[in-house]
Image 1: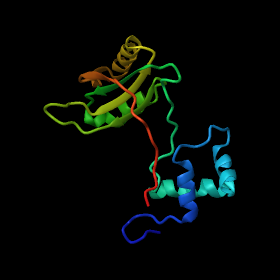
Image 2 (image 1 turned 135 degrees about the horizontal axis):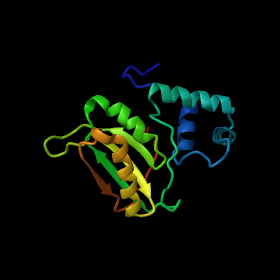
Image 3 (image 1 turned 90 degrees about the horizontal axis):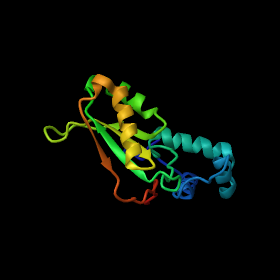
Length: 166
């Protein structure tokens, strides 16, 4: 159901769930149950509602966002790759499955200045470790690697999740 502007409708309970999760879910073996307890709801209802909001686009994704610095990974590099367009999905899946890549995604090229279309965030304890991991990615990509760079993080930006405005 939508409000006529192709925006999925949410009710007061959905709003309560969204507000309660703005800062993240509880670090708990059963975070949806903890959320339900805090809101006086049934866990199955919370999970059904979150699934519905995810499927309708109200929520774009539910994901874990680790603080790599607190885990001892003080070097972060966004590796950018020039990969043939006809293999971008396969290349992205291979690279995204690596345990040292937190996320990878396809982005448009901006020729002639920016030929890169595959981005992969690599984490390590120092830049030397990042370089080794990027070399591993280059070896996996093989002939698909039409060139790459590493853009190193210089500061931590505050990461926030979904915020309910209205």
